[in-house]
Image (tube, rainbow, N blue to C red; front, side, top):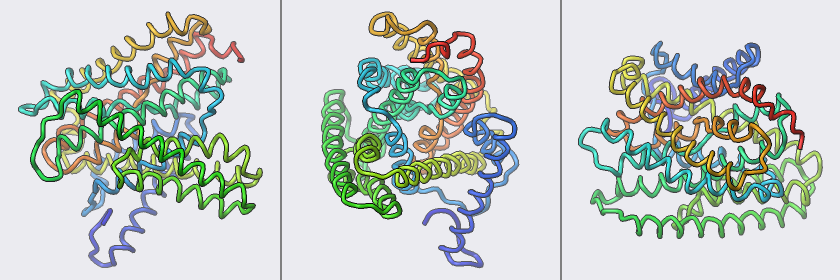
Length: 415
């Protein structure tokens, strides 16, 4: 179903071999990243590029929509929710909400305007779909740098909380627009702004309810157990189960799994688990996050190879689209971050606004979403543009966020 055709082995053994090979390669990349002291997300995006350039992807690889949206997306979101402090988040709730909802909408629209001329005869909906796809941010590289620089926990919570809710909002919008661009029955039904808002509120609201329900049921069970292996298994079932059930009843699986992760991370780990269980769960989900990120970056390399490798990336129209899209993202972020800092964030320490502005990196989730598009002309057009934007973002922002933190002096505020 997932990765390779079986010529000399069965489908299961061939898929397992491919998975272990990907993991081994990703581990080598991770070790290399540690030695050269760069965030592993940057090393992985370069590894994906190398796969495409060298033509190292094996023959017969098939990337299905189910693989991306059902297998790979839930653990990325659950792990992010698991490590976010709700108490600190509440103190930064207003700027987080502003950046996660109006900020995502503004970014989606400006990216759509920027990329629309490069989509040929495509309508506005695919352009908006691409805008929603690039809305989620990836704080991994930034948070690693903030931790090294001993930046204040309030700033880390603001950046991580914004990223988590950006992910939720962006992915929900992506899935709504995906259904409009690629309807199940093949008949396109126009999606009005009102319909879109109503659908968003409906699926997101029901997703919150289901996430709370599943999260507190799991919390209730965890309080009655004292077995770190079994309790870890419950979090695995919760991560994928909350997503799958929510999607089946017409709710947002994305919101459901994020809320469930927040419940377990903030209440389960503090009130229902022993120290050994907490350590087991944190280690397990950090490992899963590394594995999933690695697979996504390598699969994007496979997809790039299929559509032409380096030649697809360096085409004039692709480079222009990447530049226009990245500029639109930065303009949208500036239009949200700096007015917010001047009003709600008037008491932010000096330099915070610049770090928050520059910390909106793009990473694995936009790549996972573009990989999840149905095969066809639109996917072939958007894959190199999305990869180019992520590449520019991780290299330009990811490698300069450290010097920016030092220059702005945000680490001097220890609160």
